Length: 416
Image 1: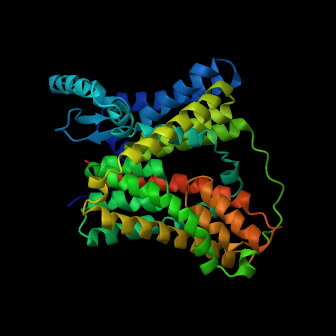
Image 2: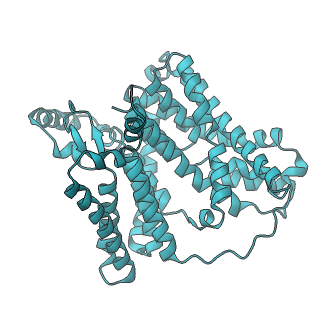
Image 3: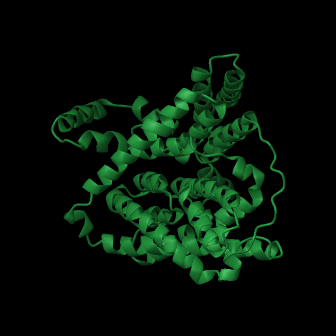
C-alpha cells in the first residue's frame, strides 16, 4: 500500500526525485534552472545573443525541472529525463537495433517519416511548437480564473470516458489514452497514446483526427440544442480597458509556467516544452525563429501528419475489432467535452448574474482557435453585434494547458 508521500512522489515525479539524489545535485538543478532564466532575461534585454541564449536558457531550465523516475529494468533505468536519457543509455543491443532500423529505412518510402517523427512523438512536439508560436497568452492573463473554469468543465469527456472505456474491456492505460481524445487536441492524443498504449497508437490517432473534424462541424448544433437563442445573443459586459502586458511580462509567465509544469509532470515535459518554447519565441521577438516555427515547421509537420494518418488508414486497421469501440468512445468523449464546456458557460452565466454568454464555454474544448471561432460564429448568427472572441480565446488556450496537465497526470500514474 503506497503512503500519501509515495503517491505524491509518483504523481509529481520532479518533486519526488529531489529526495532521491544527493543534495549537491539538487542544488545544481535549481542553480541551472535559475541560470536558464537568467540567460533568457539577458537574451531578451540584448545583453547576450537572443538567438542562442533564449532557446538554450529555456532548455536548460526545463530539462533540470523535468527529472523523473525510470524503470530500473529499462535501458536507461534510474533517474533521468525524456529529452536525452534514452539515447545516453544506449547499449550494444540498441546499436544492433539501430543497424537493423537503417536497413528498414533504406527500403520503405514513408518509414523514415513514421520512425523519426511518429513513433517517438516528435511530430506532436513540432506541431505544438508551431501552435505555441501563434498563441497570445494575454487572453489568459486578462481573465485567468474564468478561462480556467471553462477549460476544466470542458475536460468532462476526458474524465468520464476513462471508466466507460474500462467497462468496454480496455485496460486502464488504453482507456486513459482513449479518453484524452476528449481534450480535442490532436498532438496531445498522439503523445499520450505512444506513452500509454502504443499498440493502439494508429487507431487512436486516426479516430482522433477524423472525429476532431466531425465534432467541430457538430458543435454548432450542440450549442443550439443546449443554449436558447436569447442567451446565444446575450451581449457580454463592456470589457474594461485591457492591461497592456509587455512582451517581457508574457515571456516571464511562459517561462515560469513551462518550468513549473515540467517540474510537476516531467513525463509530459517534451510536449509542454514545445508549446511554451513556441510562445517564448513569439514573445522574445526573434522574428527569424517565429517565421521558421510558425511557417515551415508547423505547416510541414501538419502536412506529414495528415499524409501519414491517411496512409495508416488501411483496411486491416479500420476493420480491426478494437476500432469500432474506439470510434464510439472517441465521439462520446468529444460530445461530453462539448457538453461540459457549455455547462461551464452556464456556471459563469449564473455566477456573474447573467452577464456571461454561455456559448463561450464551448471554447474550453481546446484545438486553438477552432472552437473559439465556432463560438463566435454561433453568437454572431444570433446577434451580429456581440463579440465574445477575446473571452473564448482565453478559454481556448487554457484548454490546451489543462489537457496537457491531465495527460501528464495519466502518464505519471499509469506509465512504466
